[in-house]
Each structure stands twice: as C-alpha cells, then as structure tokens.
Amino acid sequence: MDFSLDRRRVLALGAAAGAVLALDAALPGQAFAAKPKTVGLDACMAMTPEQMASASALAVHSLAQIKRAVGTIKDPQLRAATLSILDNPAPTLLARLDEKSRKDVCAELNAKGYLKDAQPESFLPPAASAKAAPQSFLCSPGSGYQSHHSYPGGLATHTAANLEISVAIFDSYKDVYNFAMDRDVVVAAQALHDLHKPWVFTWGQGGESRAEKPLAGTGEHHTLGVAESMVRGLPAQVVVAQACAHNHPGTDKDEAEVVGWITAAAIIAGKDPVAAGYLAPGGKTLPMPRRLEGFVTHLGDHDFVLTVPMAKWTIAALQDIARARYAMTDADLKGARFNALRNYVFSQAPLETLYRTYSVGGQEALDKAVTAMVRPA
Image (cartoon, rainbow, N blue to C red; front, side, top):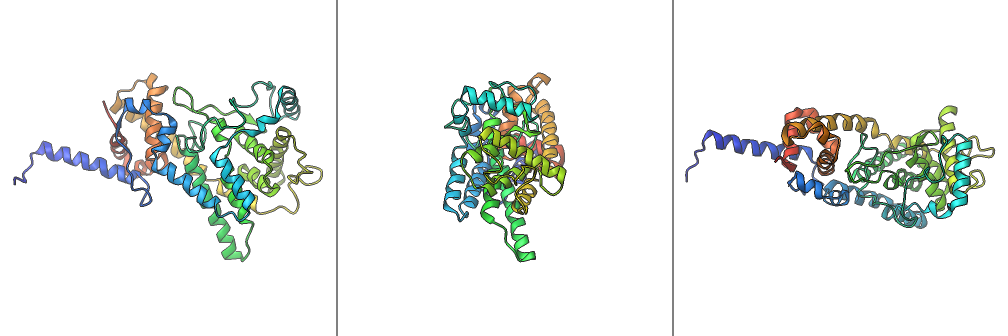
C-alpha cells in the first residue's frame, strides 16, 4: 500500500482534521456525544427554530437537566406545577383579562407609572390562546436577539446554568454556615424565573426574535412571569424569590424595584399583594424578616454578566465569517440569511462555547468550527 501523499492532499486532510478539532473544542464535553449535523445554508433556512433546538444536544440535555432538578422538589404540588409550566408555559393570565378588565389593568399600570401611555390592545405580547404557549420552552431564546443565549434552545441552556449556580450557592451556605434554606423555593424560583420568555421572545419570519418592551422598569418577561406564577397559585415564597431574580432586597432602592415588579404583577394577576403574602403590610417591602431564597435566586441569575458580552463579540465575529465564507452582503447580515446561519450554528455548538473557541484560537478556530457545521457554497 502506498502511504505517500502529495502536498495538496496533506493540506486537505490537515484542514479537515483542523475543522474536526475546532468543532470538538466548540462542543460541550463528555455529556454530549452527538456532533452537529453538517448542513448547507439553504438547509439552515429551511429549518424552524423548533427543529434547530430539537437537533441541539445541549438544548435537549439542558431541558432534561432542568426537569431532573425540578424532580427533586419535595412538595408534590409545587413539583407538579413547575413541571407543568415547563411543559407548556402558556400565558394563562390572559384568561382573566376580558376587554373591560384589560382596559382597567392597562389604565392602572399607566397611572402608577409601570407603563408609559400604553394601550389596552397592545400592552401585552400577542398570543393566540391562554391555554398554549406561542412556542415551546425548548426552542425559545434566552434573551433578546442581540443579547445572551439568543438562539433556539438558549432559554433551556441559560436556565440549566442558573439552576446549577443556585444549587451550588445553596449547598455552600449549608456546608459553610451549617444551615439550609428552603431548597424547594430556590429550585422552583430559578426554574421559572424566565417562564414567559417563550411568550415574549417569539421567533419571527426573518429568523429574529420579537423585541421586548419594558414593564415596571424591567423587561416585560420578568413582570409577566411573576404575574403568571401568581395566577397559577404558586406559594408566596416562590413568587417573591422569582421576583428577586432581577434584583435583591438588600437596600431600600433595590428592594423598591422588586416591590414595584410584584405590585405591577399583582395588578395584572388581579391579586392583593399584601393579602396574598407577596408584600409586607403597607406594601412597601417584602415580607419581614426577609427570606434568603430571593438572594440566591438573584445571585444564580448572573450568567448574563459573562454571556451578554460573549454574544456581542461572537455575533460580530460570525458576521465577518459570513462575509468571507458565505458571500453575504451587508443587507444579508440584517436579514433571514444571516439569522438562519447564526441560529443554527449557535444552537448546535452553542454561542457560549463558540466564544471560548474564539477567545483561545482566534478567528481561524471559529471559522473552522462554523464551516464544519454549515458548508460554504
């Protein structure tokens, strides 16, 4: 057998090996044996976000990981309610908002400064039904389209990471300080902290997700998610801890933000926040003395500190690859062609791990990883 190779073939084999190594470096470790399927750009454009997420080993694994964590909740009712929301994060709060109540709710939110001159027909995201989520938890992005985990499957990835962080904080306090908080509350609050991102960040025809609106001084997904938990009758401690995901009650100023989100959510849910146990008498603080589970939920929701800049830098680097390797124009980079490329690549590798590849190996390593997943024309 002739083992001699000409230089052209050696270079070709070397490039192929480099692409495999780059892709291996871009993928999570031993938990993920499956490698992304190599497809063409046209095939990317033909795939739905649901198909991309379902094909993502990380997204599927992350959702299973979330459900395993929720399965450790000891309270059977809380466990069942949390799993039910993950299976179908439907905006059930819409069921109580007929034309009159929607108008009244909108007016009260406007009057209290939680909305700015919003109209009853447009202050909530569109939804075809109160019984079914517009899209699955699995396929939803983890944030806005230029922000963290902004790809099909990103919500599952983000939530799984947050849960691991939160449980680690819980365990550290138990081990170091010799006391345990309510683990059920920590797990449920973190698992549900972004429960309405499937409603707020629906995927559009151009491959981008819907732009989020503000509500009560934060992204609408947060206040609406807290309202949903109220409507579904989740325990007050879970609702309060969930509300703390975006801030902590450690100072008067910070606590006032949390109180605002709970108050706005209660208006939407048709609840008295004091009588329901979400706020202390007078409605100015959280129930006293303040519980620790909300702080853990807040600390656990800090993956974005790293992943927001990761997204910014990786999207920009992928745009350079799209120009050079896929002959995309500036117009393409703002539309469906580039969105299809980035949605598939980021869902399969994913974005956060690709940035690690980029930060260590530079543009060349990222190029090899991307082109190993999506064939240039």
